[in-house]
Length: 229
Image (cartoon, rainbow, N blue to C red; front, side):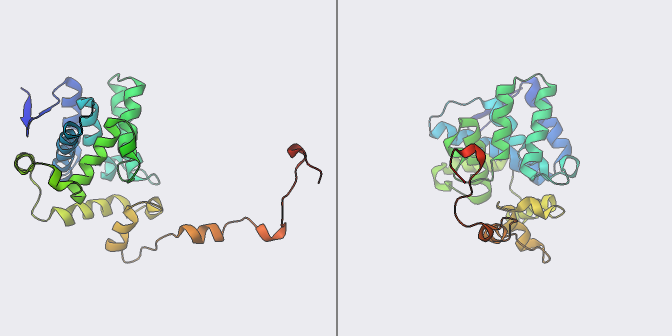
């Protein structure tokens, strides 16, 4: 039996049911409910923006987007977003989904914490991020009708202290691989939650690289460049 929440029909195919079961079995209540809300808010944003999108692909992206925070799906070195994207890819490949659709889902998860980029990409990619931004950051909050917000949260409640809870979940998924937070928003999480964390600095890395630009000033010619030495 299909379920409709805030006017959005939850995908109920065999693929969607298998994804729901997998995520439900592996994620905490906080992350599971968050992921379902991400789908609902993403779909509502898509309707508001009159975007044509595949609800099932959006559901896959939303449901798997935080799987990289779960120990069973967390690698030792990859960003958690990539771990989640890889988990979704492996799941979709096992269920015979075509590579074009898999790429959309993978990208939607890998980029969901990279502001300013997904909104310019395919709807599935843009809407996973839109759902995440609404549920975590409250971006475009007032653009979602109050009755829709109430219905979404009634179906998939936000914990009383969800804000700190989701930060704790982010910290859990990244604290053992702090190098994976370089250049992304999870550096802010570890700066808040891990007293021993030392943020890498992009400019310091440039200035401290192995290049010795002062040793050979000017243009260095090579035989292939067509100029005399």
